[in-house]
Length: 138
Image (tube, rainbow, N blue to C red; front, side, top):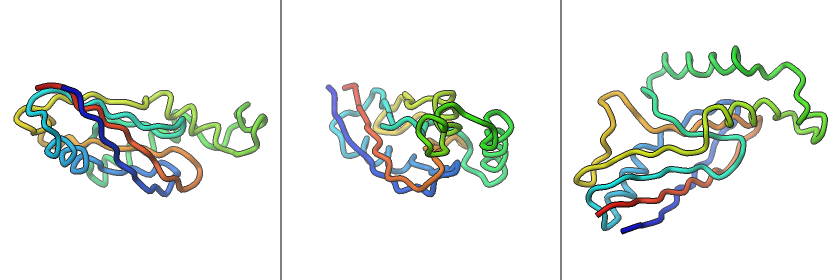
């Protein structure tokens, strides 16, 4: 069986990190699927998904890592073409990726104790993000 669901999230941009674990779990609970996988996909080219411990220190380390790896303050050809100043956000999101697959058993996500599902919004402005869930199993 396959069920589709959606989550909409308002972000602040600039590496805003949002824990969506409870929202994903709620959609699984509302579905008719007991055991399977949920594919989580963020529509857009300046946001991404991952799992992480949603703890202030780790989140700060995660945000700092992106500034070292893909800095905001260097030239990007995308910015020259479009003038929107968010070339870095496209590169960051492509490195992390737009989707994630998580198994669940008895309608419960099989995440580790300190593991949450997060949306990372790398854009340089607030956004409304659409997240598509495809719940598959039996």
